[in-house]
Length: 245
Image 1 (spheres, one colour):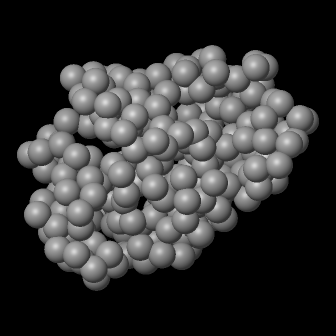
Image 2 (cartoon, one colour):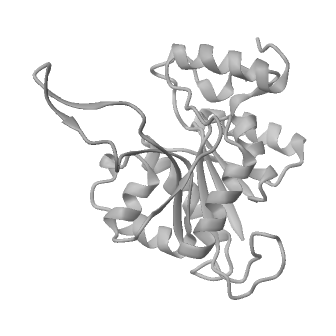
């Protein structure tokens, strides 16, 4: 079985608004992100939102009739993911999450459950890319969607370039990031510096797990800044054929 966590707990500090709730070509940003996981066979999905938005989003989720549950996030991204992970872990029959279904949905009693963590601020991820990273995680236990670094990277100190970093082995991490539930539960329970976690793969790396990379093949830009939002509005119009508000 593949459970999902969509992280939508941010306050939108850099954008000035909670980006996860903005309308994007007729649907909220978070809906686009959740739908991409559901279309790829990831279910149920836990949507992690700011505490003050839980009741409202829970009512909306009930109206949709999707396999979607809403829970409160925390002060950091690590806290938000951990909150969702705790609920998933508690919902499983076994401590390792076994006894569910495989990715295709057929019974698979001996197959360990997986958790796909995705940022709500990445509403354009393709379902095919989600399927690809899940398939790799089924085989390896830990996989992330990522993109090779195409830019020239400079190391800078005191405002000056001190060196150029070879980019041959550099990748830009994206989401979803998919891991065995039992591995993820173990890693999150052992991390010593949760404030340093910029993504879930970092937590897994700190616990000694080998994380595999799956190249993304489609647009998967993250909405962070006002410029990102303007790009997202234009891209959404092209992709879904409707101008957002």
